[in-house]
Image 1 (tube, helix red, strand yellow):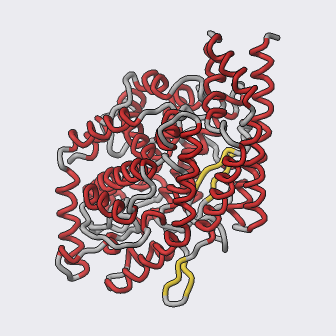
Image 2 (cartoon, helix red, strand yellow; image 1 turned 90 degrees about the vertical axis):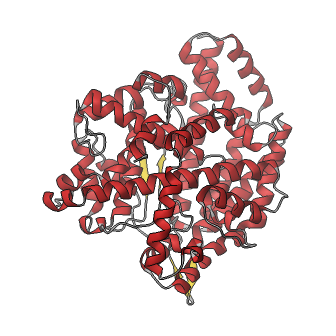
Image 3 (cartoon, one colour; image 1 turned 90 degrees about the horizontal axis):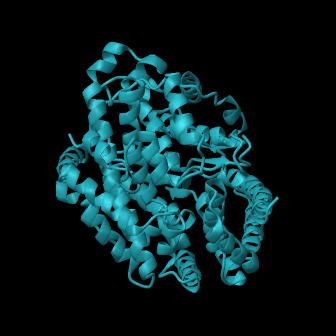
Length: 529
């Protein structure tokens, strides 16, 4: 066995052990919310960072990378380089970052908004924002949830500065640019894709926003100029309000998990073992959102949710299981541990988003929710408009996060409260401001930094994959309501997206899977009109 082979064998073994311990402890922590469980996460993360901080090993790695020509060995070395590079620098600084990240995340996960002296879950806040018509009650619920921003603001700014300190010590302009580079992206390519999308959409959001405002002003019996953030039925106006007279929740009154499980089985994926190991329902202290965790890259994949029987959670379950089938498929290959991963974080988002859309798919409603075909056909156009509202609204919310984080890491000492509402006004066209750290109430800024743009890239790829699957696999022209309960769809995704794991860069994988480079074209075509 040569030097490189011996080195890679050792790295695959060591990092596998760290990965498993870290993810098992993290799963326990976000389920329980207990201090001692978060302490274990912090300890495991510090231990892993200490291991990666080894400068001698890092130099050896760089030396191997410069000389290696075998594609699979070189790819493993590239992945190791990106993993090690972000953990060089001062050990104490790395420990401080890990400690602060864990503390902030725990505060987020255990926070419950108080309304009228009563603690409410995120699901309950969401219900108030979607159903209440009294502006004062809406404002009360919205402001109660935003208080978590003030709870973490000071520590979060400190964390941003610590991250920047680390990045600058490693030769980067700031943490933002470091994160992109170590994830095989550049700000320029992301910005170009977003600008291309805006040109293709040609002002579609602004026209939509006028219609939304007209609808909401009638709903709340106020002038359009009086509309405030709490009127948009969402804490961040990220999905778009329900302005069309359709109630998809009535199709999801039964066991959503079983409905989704059956759909995935028909598409060629048995998700039974994933669901058995998962944690799906609300608990005190538990993480209130949803996520998927690949515990060991050997088949132990779990999702965490807070399921209710409604369309939102049906879509979320479809989404998280989209991540899970991706993880489970590459976990079962014979690839080295380091290559058992998604090609990029946005390629797994694309799969999750592709499957999530089925909750608003008329084929899905008829087949799996047993909806009356005639009733579904009557509301087909309204469902399309509702989905368009959601997707276009998200493009602008994503621009808020993309541009705010970029500026946050450039200058964390500026007036961030003011900056937040300036960007909201520019992209979401909401004319409002207040001197409160509302930006800090978005958990991703703390726990998933420089990540959010990947959701929109994922939407681009989801539409691109959808176009290819419908035309080349299903041999159909119906890109709006395709029937994905087809094992040929599963076979295609397994072969061209899942099984390659991280053996190649994301751009090469996409070109091979769809025949063209990543483009916003199909997303724009889908949701422009």
